[in-house]
Image: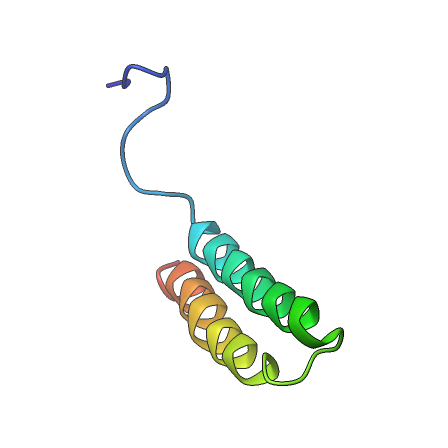
Length: 65
């Protein structure tokens, strides 16, 4: 069944979690670079988001096949 915008409803694509994690990482890096013109403290939240967000997304993708 299609929704009002013409797309199909259902499960998001397997890469959706990775895309969200990358957008969160870009946000943290952007704040860090804007505040002091270099990457300092944002290394830790970016590493955590990439490890858990992208890692679990890929694990879910390849663990079910």
